[in-house]
Image (cartoon, rainbow, N blue to C red; front, side, top):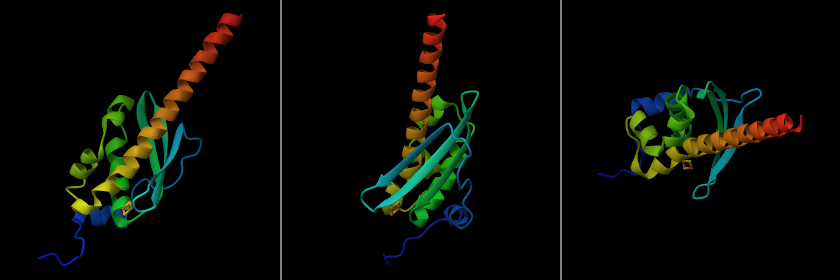
Length: 141
Ligand code: FES
């Protein structure tokens, strides 16, 4: 019987009540803000990269309980991954790590992953630019 209530598992409730990796990163390597036009929620992600891996990933969101919980879980899934591995992550990886989420909340699990991918692309674009500037400076000598 559909009561109209949304039922979350214990892991989702734990990450909603005690979200991990919430906040800002001082001097981040990449930052991105993404929104979900279907509900108006948004999320800001910041990353630091060390040795080609996601060393730190923090988020701030104005989102629903599922967005908060899945974003917290997404940070745990992504931290430690190489940039290539992190770019391969999708909402299914977050849903699996969460132990499943109600179908109508599946879109909420995309926010953190979309923001993570944007932040990585920003980091890679900056790294490319720095490398090009380095080459140009070396060629000018
Ligand atoms: Fe907007 Fe969940 S309803 S992110």
